[in-house]
Image (cartoon, rainbow, N blue to C red; front, side):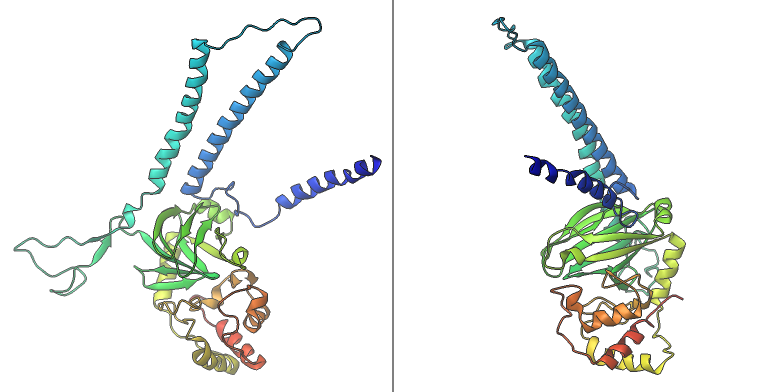
Length: 377
């Protein structure tokens, strides 16, 4: 007996360790720190449902203890308390109250569901054609050209998200640019997402900004998010996203980063990406790396932010500006060389493992070249 009691002395230490570790991690990686309209709406619904559940538990427990102590059997008293079955007043009360509680929870939930699912603003509509007798030239084009396509929500940012094993591709169809592993968005406005998968089912999730949504190989799921500028500044302009659907051995390592910029900075970033030129390589080693990249890596990776490339590897057009390597490693030359040398040790089951076996000097050259791929100083 004493031996068993001694084993329980570790329980307080375990509880304390759990509480301490629960406070570790990057800022704004929890749904309990909402950083946008969608996240705030979902957070409010969680609080509402929690309050209702706690109230129900409190009322039930109060009734439970009242009954236990008031109607407990006493010594020498075998009388049976008054029975209340068939009491219409009580039956109405315990039927109506749950219905009212469900309505209190259901109305805002259904309303929010339809509101958050409204992606009509991202839909394309044809420009208004001139009426008979008016000039037939189309704005932005010559006569006879196909009418340009615009969004219902003028100026809306649309991102096509493709999930891969184990990385993310973000394409901006209206701007003609592509990024890999790092999503860049404007703050304080709706950003629309079209989600799909290149292989198996994944799930797109930015915990602090909105709930997850599946990415499927056979269809496109659509939704929108809004990134709060004040919360973004508090988070250092960087949010963290993950795959939230078990997809393979490196599922837990399928991360991506989200850079939230104000609209002016975002427009500048778009312009720089659209006008990106081949880097002016300063060293002979980087020039050698460019040749090796063109011969060995270009079949899987694109080195231009305006080219989509293949589905085997992410776009590397602005690799030198990223905050992480492979979504998980600190962005530095040492980690980059380690990743190129043996990606399997970092992400088991990834598509890069075993494709090309570069020599050590070739790895040095390719790393030097990739770190020069920047579109902004």
